[in-house]
Length: 299
Ligand code: SF4
Image (cartoon, rainbow, N blue to C red):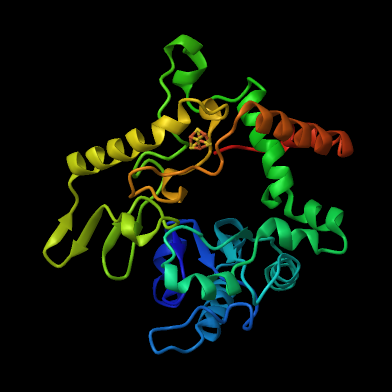
């Protein structure tokens, strides 16, 4: 479960007793986290920090095994500062993500660009990249792309037992790398809107929870997904990345419009360039291949 952590003190007994894994959204120290406000407009950090302290004291084993963190990168923090805070406070490295760039209103673009930070650009500013990459491991974009490459092209990765026994001819490809709705996650906002995932723009709600009950029309959801797939298929059908795509269609600009454009579209030239970059990373870090193959567990 992903949570802002504000109500954790109330519900922690239930969560810990049922061994429920939680991901807490926290962007670092009080200043790093200052975009996150409570319903009164005040910093949510003191309450969250206190709640985490309570969990750590009351359920230390559970805290170690089942509590993870997601930090969002912006203009009030950096990858290095985030790592420093979490290592000192909780002895972990959190998952770090960029702000979603899809669905920003035109008139808010200036404000958005001011607070947006690119993960890759931020890492370039780090004084000791080897050290930070070692700490981040799969959370580092460079290492993540090598791991994705091995998943896509090593020939030893199977999404399911069905894939293990199916021949290539039996495979059907659904455009993009989008998860099927509720196949992995579900996200419900405080206002009751239902989404397939918390990383999706609010224009893509697929249902609602209210006092009247749950409004979820599966036939309508299937129709909607098929309409989106049809729009993007034109690009995917000639893309060199189509068989191993990780792109979520909800992160493609203009999915609601007639002709969405996927910026990750891969032609032969860009495929060669990507392979070349991956091979260079592997040549420079010869131990990386073995570490990923032997240590990475894909759930
Ligand atoms: S990367 Fe290629 S296959 Fe994936 S969504 Fe974009 S165009 Fe389609």
